[in-house]
Image (cartoon, rainbow over all chains, first blue to last red; front, side):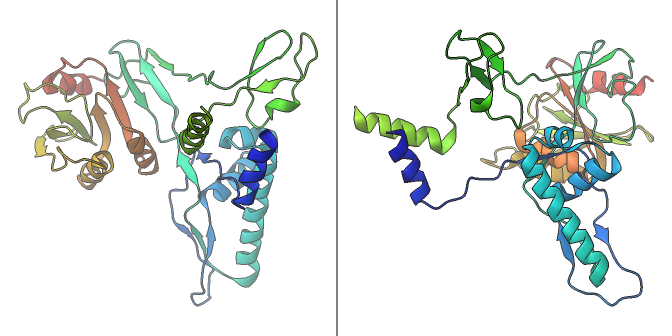
Length: 204
Length: 106
């Protein structure tokens, strides 16, 4: 049944949808222009590509760390970074302007809680460190950490639940206790869930 | 700096509106001149897209901080790119005057 299902999906010839990339620090200007050249058609650098240049070359992070920050896998990150460098090279060599635009991204900032007035606030300006509450200016604040425990891998032998790591496929992990290969507990969402439910109803 | 506070009515004794996009009024408070302006929300009964429309409205007034009970999914992405700070207050009994008093202390 699994094989027919896979074949069905393949027959649609539809690529897997892109994962939404997290951009923590978007640029606050629109792009670059070469000096002394008349306007040529610009090179569009996506926000995700800008972010990859920022993480790899400005913050000098490794690909694994940077991929985790952008919430994509390491190979995907490498591809984003490669297109970014190609586009920048094209703009430099041919004297084209660079425009920051588009990309499948979401912007994110971190949440903080105030222990005095009980409010929650976020902090979109990353350059300035958070020192006091946005409402009552109290210094008694804490960072809100959202733990994503919804995605887990289960060991088939001892049923131990392992927390899923971003960019690590579940079926290639081994249980630290008994050495068995783990299953990825897939959570069905959206259209995929609807299709699976229809399939089940049809069978029943 | 201007702060937008969602309000249930156009007076200082009104309570904070717990919803951002479909609140009744926005109170725009200027921290420098201490002036307060109440703007009725045109998207109060909107079916969809009230949040982004509300962000546009308060951003056009120059607000850099939004105070409300809750924010929707679409709002945070927009405000992050516009560099607007969000503040969530769980206490729905707080009045606009109380929030402004909190903002005044430093």
